[in-house]
Length: 53
Image 1 (cartoon, helix red, strand yellow):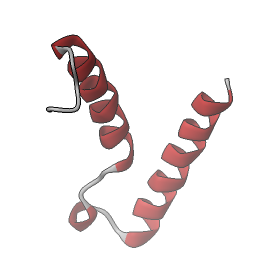
Image 2 (cartoon, one colour):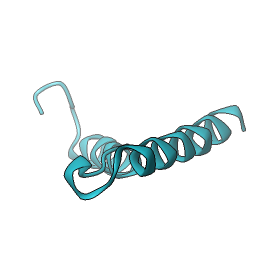
Image 3 (cartoon, rainbow, N blue to C red):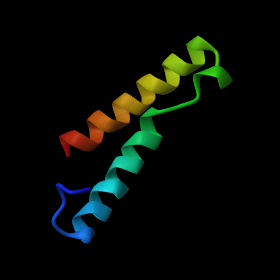
Image 4 (cartoon, rainbow, N blue to C red):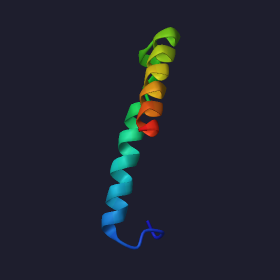
């Protein structure tokens, strides 16, 4: 938090980080490995699509 000079920039960073975190992080114990890999691949494809725009 000390690296952010303004509270607004910290809030923006936290909002973006939370969105990315929620996109990629899933509870592995709730899914089978195949389903986890499929969801992970879909999230990665969506992320790459967003980065290329």
